[in-house]
Image (tube, rainbow, N blue to C red; front, side):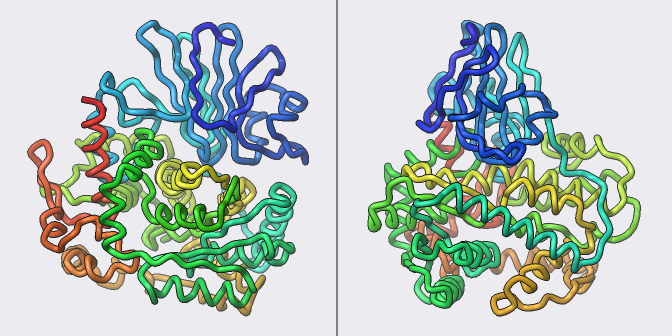
Length: 530
């Protein structure tokens, strides 16, 4: 092992490996040249951790390689298994798959602001000074200094083809992914969070087609009679799948949110990078207990709707040349909106504005195809990897396994090449699903400017948005289908939580439940690091 590196790993599925003069640890799997690779045969196929080699690894994995004078860390293309590193007072590197807040640690102010406004921390930073995270598709070499290298970019040239040819290719990819999945999880109990959306539905359909109906438990949750649960049951019944429902109410949330269990989970899941996932937590706990689950495989539907184009604004697909500042304006209001700052968030002088501007400035020739790729790449590397995908920590917390077939590298590659007009509002994705399963998905109409609220309301849009958000704030305590605003026992307590002051600025109009969780979580971490 490297003399200058201390490795502390929390998850028991990090297995020791030895190959080519290296020792280390590997967790997960990948496919390489038609071979299925785990820790068992990793040494047989390993040819080095160069960017050229690692790019070919398609899977969910994290790798730590150590030799006498160097430690190499590698993450997959979705950061499904996080890794963190720091330097000790004795100048040794410390590598961990978690960060636990301790009194000796101090909060990084710019990271606190990002976590508060976005629900995640961008780049290689974490909430804690001197602790760093590996980003998606990254190799970090720890020697005298940490040298970082990204081995994949989502910003590529688009291909031109008919929608039917693209749809046929996408359907083939989906079937191949689920063929591989079936082999990988054969004999395991499969848990499918089944919402009313398209992503979990396509997984249910493909798993049934592959003959796994008897192995599947689907589940959903929320206020009794909510629309998502109703659709979920309809789909499960049509497919003949076992379905479980967990009722949520305000009293349940009030008890959970102040419990030691929730506090322990927040520390487990946050790791100084992301808000802890709330939505699945109660139902996962109950499901594991009621079914006596042991190492079942949870298959969340992350995040084919994003890859398919659901997050692209209409204004970005317009055929024109864009200025860098316009691209920054697509990113900041979309992702840094959990709280509204009374004096506004400067895109040019704030740390957040400078960070996003620096990210965007590496690109030139800003036509609509490139701009939509940049918007999606930023979202993929930051929000999707650190906030959405980090939700799988809830399954790990209850000692279960997981996989994310809809984030397979083959889907990342496929959608990176699709022209913007076919991705907008998931047009190609929805069209493909209709072609595959017309009885379960309607034929979509190609969307256009009518789907843009900015285009529809023009100069009135910012004013109308503020009015809508303010009205929604006071109604959602009673109307939210998940009932999670019950973290505040009374409506009066909820209203009092709608604004606060920090560093002389007033924060108000929380965007959703994650705004409250982020604020409370940061306070918790400050208490733990006093």
